[in-house]
Image (cartoon, rainbow, N blue to C red; front, side, top):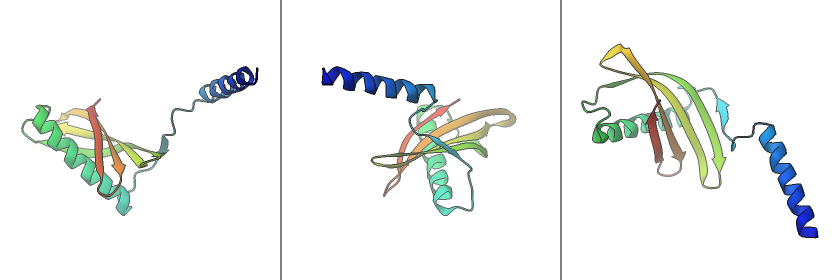
Length: 118
């Protein structure tokens, strides 16, 4: 009986958290290029994303031009802070703009997690 009561409370709590829009802990923050940590992670992430894009054929000529940071989100997990950048990029001409989303884990050394074009 205690198990079922605990289960009901757990389900009620999870339902409440879902209803409040909790999405796993990502926090939107403002990118500040003067912040050494953010700038270092941004630089590392753009470099690694471009290397992987070249090898996968998404950027075969290595001519991505990185524009403004549209958003930055951070999330604290048990293994450290994750940084998710959404960056405007162009390839070839300014009219050919798209968004690059990449995630970096702030550890020593930095760990490039993933990238995708949006």
